[in-house]
Image (tube, rainbow, N blue to C red; front, top):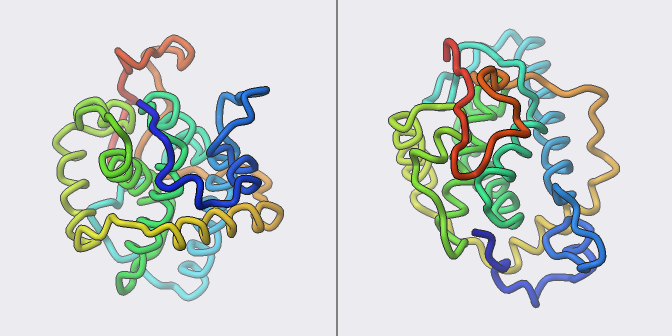
Length: 223
């Protein structure tokens, strides 16, 4: 399912290799480095936002992406799960980051432990459908993300309208984000993972036994 990156030749090859968006063919890691970098960025952002909201006693603005409680699954594990089972290109995660950055420009919108997971699965799905050669159905993505198909459909529509369907990312913007990810790799460090959104650990099957053709749904609990 993974395709080539949009206009890959126009992007600095060294940065691309560092992020794992391309490989040297000598060593292909299970998870490209961009995933861990994005995990650190999202975890740090969530921590800072929630500290600020608590300090200023600001009540978080509700949205379609907010769950009722944070789960036990870390952002890092969730991002790795999406990559493993969605079979999307690593570049989709860079696009997803850009889309989320655009989304949180809305007034009183903050990235928190209650919405980050749903924003991640929705933004990756949008990116995969936009740049990859092939993609799965929303029913499949819903199983990967630990939500119902109905909710996956609703979140996708909400997300697209919130972005005014602006999914196009030019080469300059993509390159800038790749460079920032590479340069800020040493800045974003989180001592321990942050618990996030409304999705719990997989309780019905070991993760190693999950296959792309039959992904077992996470137990959502109360979301």
